[in-house]
Image (cartoon, rainbow, N blue to C red; front, side, top):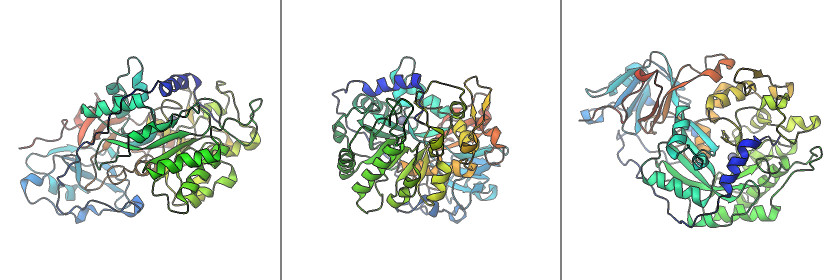
Length: 500
Ligand SMILES: [Zn+2]
């Protein structure tokens, strides 16, 4: 494929190319909350265990004994999708300060209601963890007129994105984001990936080494890793082993030795490496580089391959052999594949079309591997997670006119995902891809209260209705950051309930 919206991409590439500023501001580390609400809640520490294996039983927590331990806010009488295994659904959730105190049925959670607790009746509506977008360019957008840092955060929050990952931060953008954080104006969690090589293959060198990885527990801002482009897509063409008509085999930016060295250097300094790879030659080179850096060890640095858009069949099993974290797109470009648009220059020949977005195959043939969703907004797609969920589950796409539906071709239909799978990739698994699964991505006691209320339950509506689900409330760390103007009844006052 290599499909990228050419118009929009040009804008983003400019952002990438902005001349590096001289600033060497250091990463600020917002102080994580030190006070746990309940003495009986233990902080999860085992990093290597898959998040699905750590299941809290909410009924085992002791209810508050003293007034100071009651919840600030309790949501009751709803459908709470926890993204945990037990319980996967609950009725109610209690929040105190920035964190979740209890999840369970109405009766269990009602024990956390004290004299000053704000109780909200969900009236059967659905509450779930906020979406975790594992890779986008949200803050890059703020470098353009009429799009301030506050505006772009507003946009993401209004669609229920509570954690964002900026996948390509140069020195100037880093400066701006650090300032937003220092000014206390970071409203969603942001994990940063510092740019080593740009979308056009320009090597920015080792400037990032002045900003070591930093992931304080509970902090809104993390510097998580570096971002490297290994092939084209948003600039130039994806590197493929077949031949694009009249366009050759695409553009690979590094030799294998060079990429190996980049991953090795970054890994040695504690960075996670996120490697952009659209075409199969780029996927292969990225797999090789991660394999060489890990040298037989498990992928504890959680090195990721971004996009995985064209995967040659012999590369499929290598994801598990190496333990790569695979980042996948959501919103499927069905309109492009049915010829609704002709803005992309390079087309995959029909005999290789089964290599395109083979996510069903990748998931089925790599059981237990960590897959995570990314929107890649605005390079290629919408920020609205519901459009991505709809795309993953149906492989249909709403055309640019906003009405016409593009149906997927036969080869694409086979790669549909279930709603349950897709939601996990969009929450707890994408949190894993950012080293945040101990803090967010699911609802259980001790985790941060990053959650959203929806107009409908994605698990019970028809697949075609997924695209129309609206976010009514978005909460980050117990604070309401977005409330639909028509659904104010569902939003507690910002900052939680009254404290004495
Ligand atoms: Zn991107």
